[in-house]
Length: 106
Image (cartoon, rainbow, N blue to C red; front, side, top):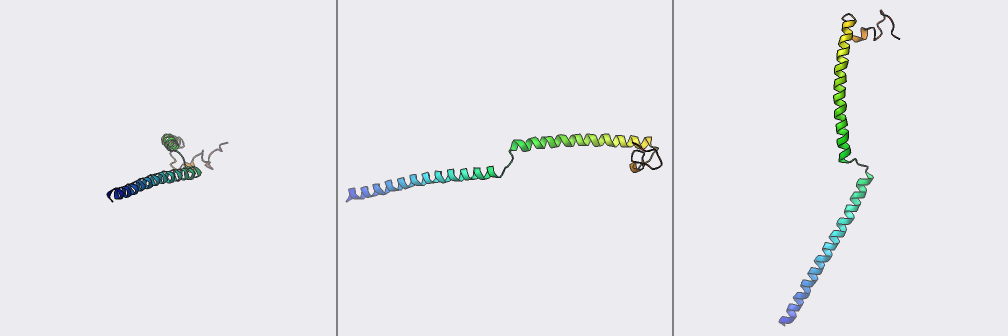
């Protein structure tokens, strides 16, 4: 009876080992299927890559720097124009803006 009992336990152990192997295989199959579906979903969303975002961020920083430099230059030119126009502080009254009392600029 001892030998039969051991054989029975051996068969149950083998069955459990086989079931664990099947479960692992099934888990890998599910993981592969989910990964493929997720990759397909992301590809359909037309997302941008990190590198593209970093390039755009650098371009934006350069544009801001250039914009600040141009604003400083424009402020200096406006101050010079006010000085040349006889101290008019409102640029809408300058000859360039179309002061009715001055000559027309073509």
